[in-house]
Length: 320
Image (cartoon, rainbow, N blue to C red; front, top):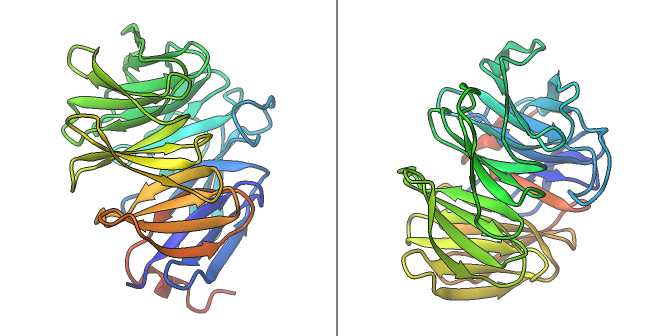
């Protein structure tokens, strides 16, 4: 393995790259204060980073109003997209066609850039979610349907990003829905409810809740381990992550973390989970044995991360 990680360090106000095996930093780019969520294109050429502008969703402030484009191979900023009034970009994603979607928590609108590599300004579509304080979203591969997790309206809304004439549909899942994971077949949407401490399953055809099951305290993210038919939740204030049987909802394993977990990702092979922890660490766990197989130190408040392909660091040879 010669893999690298691209990691937002929110309170160091930067993005860094690390060698997964050694923990050595392989690069760093300074960003505006409090960057947060980001997405990488399929070619691993560009990353699109939302400038959220505050440390977390409970803090007031609307300074964050942009999406920063980073050339990953050159480790440099190449463009910044202005969001105008649509402050606090949080959820961010790309569809199968490479179109960019950015969710403004402040205005609860989804902004779409059909060609994010154009490096111009302006947005091609701006659509209301139908909720308030829209924080994260799930998106079908074709981009035609989105599901917004709305913190203050306390619901999940289904809406059509390219057809605002279709009224959003509100789905009540529990208190403070936030985490989301859609099955690859797009028939089920899993959500976590941070105050209710539950996982909820939504049938995407009927838009009805078909089942819920309990979790530890504060499940803020959820991931689908398709290799083992399991669900993984990150329990922020619970100081842990949990693994559940997808069919029964039985908790198979709970792993305490040294401090509150901040972000989690699974590698492409779904062999390992990587967890950013609020003690300036990233830990790598085996999803088979749950053994901690690697720990390395990071900057302040490590956050969202992406695992880059084997050998990607060859692009950085000779960079200053």
